[in-house]
Length: 344
Image (tube, rainbow, N blue to C red):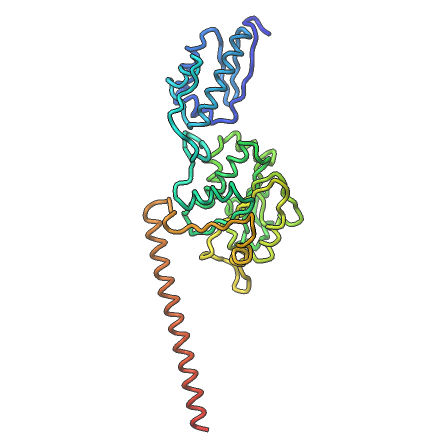
């Protein structure tokens, strides 16, 4: 209590509060006009309401409705706020079943191609899903969006992101900084996706309390991953023993999504990709789904599709040339053997 009556501190940490209030806090000024009996003070993700207890309770209920509306549609207008304040509820003129996450700055994150939608449906129905496809097909981004949605819906307690650090031979000790710093070069696509989907301060708090955990694949050994959405990215660079180790870490109430591109294997020649093997031997197991994405799913710049197609064509030509050379060598060897027999 104070000279103005009651006060209540309300957290806005679950939304992108800067975007919620708008440029120059325009929406906050509008809300203040609608609640003239209250003094509203905003400091980052915290809002303090000062005034009569009944007025604060009414304001908090309306503010929660505003934030729910914002979470649903990724934006909020003065008209929507007015309807909520007048107890008519926010306008529900859109269907949002396809939206996976309402990202920062009003970004609506959804499956944008048929195969991405197949990936979403597969994760709903199965606890382990493999997403295989070339760069730019959205497999990693969609997987991260599904993980963030599961966390927001309290379906799981944490997100675990991992990736084989092939270039460093899984030996990260020589790199500067803490574990997350050492992994940054390898996990940047996952960081970028998370930053699109979660407000910066909230994301930092998730790092600090390990709600979102970053770990190299080698560090998964010996663990049991319960109540988690776990993403193994760039799985084509996991060896057969590493991938077997990872897949057997699955605990209760866990979702595993394994993403990779079997055309971009960076392992040494004497090591075989665990992803290639896994997709062959696990495809008939109930509860495991394998989704293949292709060039039609590329959602980057239109040139990316053309680049992928050009490389595919040259690789096919090179493979045909290698086959022709192999056949020619076989014919020459056969002819040489025949000549030797004739001489003898």
